[in-house]
Length: 123
Image (cartoon, rainbow, N blue to C red):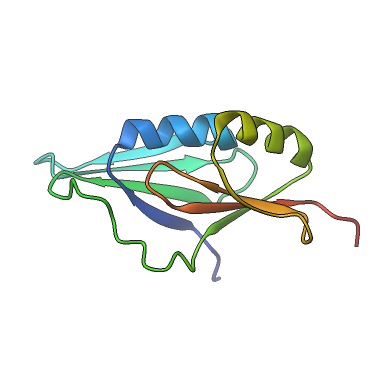
């Protein structure tokens, strides 16, 4: 067996990031791990439909912004509620790029990570 399990984003403000993902994408905390010495905390978020998890990692000794390079990586979500979510994300002010020709858009989370929103399309 070989299957996807999770993807990690390191974040500066864990509570702010959790709140963003709950509001924007309806993800919920499914597991937490705290270090004994308080140096890190890991929170796994799930969509309630798949087994895939988004891991948010907070490191006590890394308060500065993370270097995201040229942002050539991103997380993508497929949805059958595209118009509803687009309106929500527009109201939140978190849409950072729209490609109307391709019919998709990207959100930017509090740490600058991009999340692609893709509508379900008939094949």
